[in-house]
Length: 270
Image 1 (tube, rainbow, N blue to C red):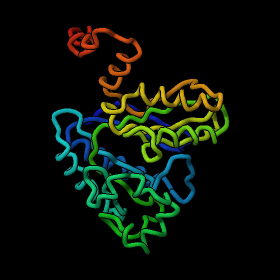
Image 2: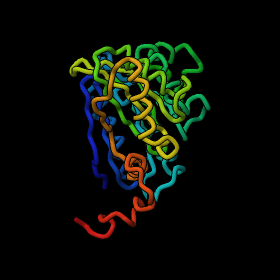
Image 3: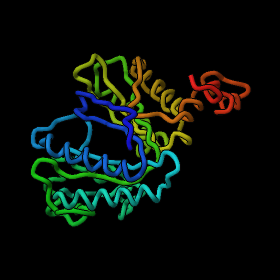
Image 4: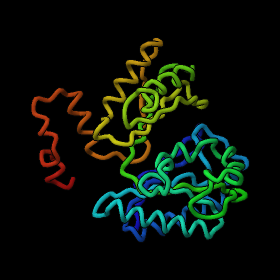
């Protein structure tokens, strides 16, 4: 069985993120069923959105949550790729499942996005998929899948409508621009809201905690006379990601009190 634990949809990104958990076999089947339904319903020829993407089912990560290894997740991603390839969908493997070093980074696969890869996949040998045809599905494009550890999608909203500021702040914290290790960021205009957003993917919250990215965004935004007005979380959040930031902001002399065994809910089922 599988259980849906979170569903996020954003009209500016024009993107849905669905998080579910279950046994390996059940999660594989659920991903296949969900992908087939998305392929049936979504036509990428008319799709527009702020978030980079290469297909109707842009990315399907398999993440070890409990009693599952990363190696098992790699096997699941390969099975998923093989099955979707039989449906006529080109599939790229990323992160721990990647067959090529440069494809560990999803940004390299998404280069050019749907519109650019649609042509490159047919002419550039370096852009050939790992599975499936070297040509986009007529309406669904291509899919990225792979095994990875938990990723935190933690977005920070700035009190301005000037997307140039969001892009400057995003660049300043991005790992490839001299920012924080483990942080990927982009500045986004939210046309349906009265502010802009720094969209952030944190690929290792243990080494780069949430409070550090929040404080750096505040610092960089202040250069332009802008403040942080709110933040949003996409998907689920590991307890450890909350606790290390709580320890920082509370300035606890005894941080061990935030260990799981010291939490009241550990002893009672409320």
